[in-house]
Structures are given as C-alpha cells and as structure tokens.
Length: 163
Image 1 (cartoon, helix red, strand yellow):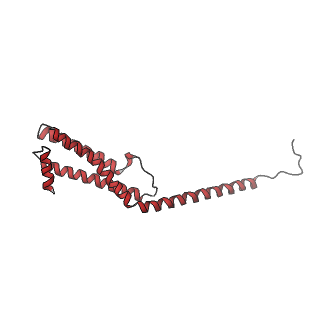
Image 2 (cartoon, rainbow, N blue to C red; image 1 turned 45 degrees about the horizontal axis):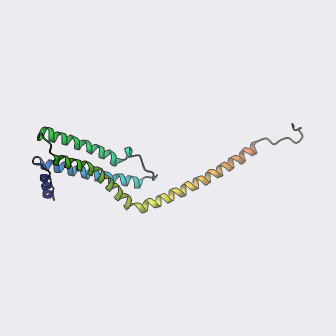
C-alpha cells in the first residue's frame, strides 16, 4: 500500500522527501478521521442531544490544528527544501486540505449512523422527561395558587364593605 502511495506522489511531481510527505499526510488524514469519530461518539454519549456550535466540536478544532501543521509543512518543504512549487504540487496540497474536513465529517456521520438507535431512545426519554417536567410545573403552580388563596385573610362579614 505504501508503494502505491509513493508512486502517486511521484505522479504529482514530488521527487524529494516522499516518505515525509506520505507520513505527514497519512498522519493528518487519520487524525481527522479519528477526530470525526470521537466527535460523533461524544455527541452520541452526551446527555442532551443538542448540536454544539462548530467552534466547540472536537473534529473542528483538530481540523484547524492539522490544517496549520500542513500549511507549515508545505511552507517549509517548498521554501527551504525544493525552493519551487509546481502546479501538480498545488493540486495535491489543495486536495489534501479539502480531504481533511471531509474525513472528519465522514467519521462523525459514521458514528451517528452507528448509534442512531441509541440516540432515538435517548431523544424519546428526553421528550418524556420534558413532558413530565411540564406536568410537575403545572401542578406546582396550582399548589402555589391554592396556597396563596388560603393564606389571604378572608373578609370579615361584620365589617362594612366599601362601595
């Protein structure tokens, strides 16, 4: 498998440091896939099944970190190592940058599909809990209203009422 990847790198015009490029790319791709899987697992295991904002998701933070590492490596490789950039290199790096968030999304969606039954049960239990809380709140309000009316002094029938 590694030989196929190294041959692919040769077709993109990479002649130097192919093993480094393959290693870093593989590490970043797998990190994003695992980040997506972890993000999906965290969502499936959460008590509230509410989507978190994108900035708070593990997969997004890992994606930003890995994009930064990749940009630093690209800069180092093309400025200090080979001192040029070919259109084939730009195509490879562009596709690598697009592939990382896609892998994170794929990993997350695989976990959400895998645990969809468990999440449906959780949603049903959460809805039942919300309905029960509403019923309890209504009963508490009724009790509070009846307690307020019993605490008020009753009008004295012997007193004259103001008209």
